[in-house]
Length: 266
Image 1: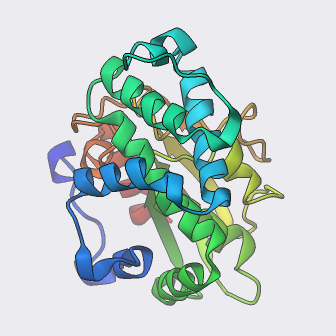
Image 2 (image 1 turned 180 degrees about the vertical axis):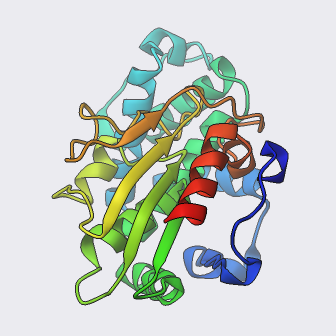
């Protein structure tokens, strides 16, 4: 807000920032830097569960199609021709991610690998989801207006909390903000079906950088059909290396102004 010439209209003590990294990463004892973690996912998932391979293959295949990457482009990443054989061909997924890296600067393939694993764990592993949901739910005040600002996997967590887990909760959310959200990706959207507007949410504002391959689609009627329709800002100029970082979204003047005005007026 300061970078946008705005003053925070509430006390910092009124801000809640749930952290669920330890719950999400079940290999905490051997934590690796994000780039190395992505490499582990990209190399090692062939030996993992078939369901995870299927989920990741679906997400990567959709990203490849949306980004206009051809099978010829993917073949060119190695010396051997890759024959796509459905979800069993993890080599195709690896080469597709490498092609995204090559054609879209900013380690975008690694961004997809990390985001896909995070979302899969949250949607498919009840023990992880329960810890995250309990922690985020505890941060949500009742009987007072709260502005929910979410990013990346956080948009999936926040949406599920508000749309699926709000029964009996006295939450009031005049503004729900999603930044760099993968909610429009088919495999992720299907994992949250049926889709609907959270009843306690007033306005829903979504922002994305069109070069952010994690936020593959705007959350419009074509990709996330709910009523009332979500307002989308699709021209964020995210300065972070992979065009997905939270700082590059929060420093957008329109995003900052929307959050500021909701905190000040709602």
